[in-house]
Image 1 (tube, helix red, strand yellow):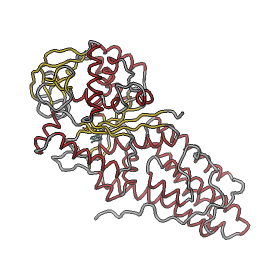
Image 2: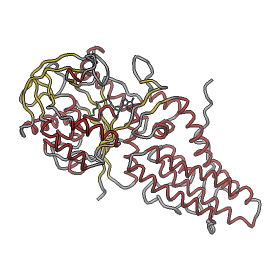
Image 3: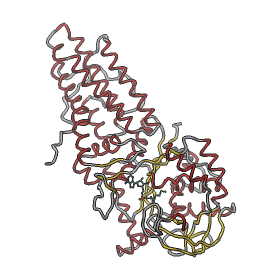
Image 4: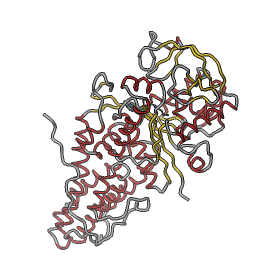
Length: 508
Ligand code: ME8
């Protein structure tokens, strides 16, 4: 039986249209999913949309639609973008689906039966954009400490979750499991937060209707974060604890942005503890993208539309750039100049050129037919060993979610390939008939190293990987078994490659 691997993205609010921030998280999850599939795992990759709550209700009112009409319209935009970005998700959950509503209702009832949800009264300051309550002391000039927007005072009857009860258990869990919250800086942030003391959490609302009713009390709807977080198990069929739930829970990694860390590392695990279910193995919070040095916002009209980027630069260039440019976990800045620079130097010059040069030489010197290699010299051996080491490095970096380092390891081998050509000077060997076997060895090393490079790239740039492998005459799919040296067969016909990534002239 294949080992199981479960990776999730946040479910995105439907009051906003998708931008590069959403594309970033989803893309990172896709690379993990593709890589784990390649390594022989059975992967469940979940994404979806968060469709309940006051924020969505307000947006629908403004747009003159029902919340469901808004959700139907916007979720299609997410799905269309994921298709265009080649996202290989297993399931797309919408919180308005029956399977989800039933699961949330059961989950809520279960925690209530355990005595960890009780009815009380709430009076506090509410930030609608963040869907978060704040105490007066947490406010800054009566504004939300997270987003700096005005808050409003709300008093309502509310169900509360006894989060305070789980403070010690949560802290002990975080301390005993250094991998649970990553990166480390985020883990420290949450440890301090929990040590300050957890208050019970309001988990229902009476001031609007757009949500899942509290079981047994239709005047209340379940708090949107309680509803949303539960998607990670309802998509697996919860409350049925067999089948996919048994196979995939607890999740291997929840990928999120740093903005929603507390919900995933404090609220969600304590809900699960109360329900007697295992907590996630890992929550990884990545950094935040700004655009040309500024915060992305509708009012600044600088929201970067992934659709537009893909149309302009191609899907794989966008996929490469987003994961290569910024170490996962840190904040980054998006600029067209940086993207064009990466395309020209890494993709056109390094990757494309290597394939182009080496396939052109094989065609010129051997009519495009791969020859049996002769004995290795130290320079060949070093190049082969560097290629073999890359396989381990990429594996380790992807385990650490260091996408950018994984790509760096691959690009070191690509650069080594270009250098290997310069140093072995095949054009000189071709002039001397006595060097024919030596030339065959050089060509074999160049093309076999690239076969492995394109196998690994299948997780990052699926189309480019396919194209590269097609030029190399490889017909089988990238697989873990193929990640070893020496599988490219002498006799293979190799076509002369076109430019994979044409250079882009800077806009004047
Ligand atoms: O928070 N840079 O949904 P959301 C990087 N529905 N990533 C960004 C980003 C940026 N500038 N902007 C957004 C919600 N993101 C809830 C989640 S989960 C149970 C419920 C990404 O539509 C990042 O992953 O506001 C962030 O966590 C997510 O979009 C927030 O999406």
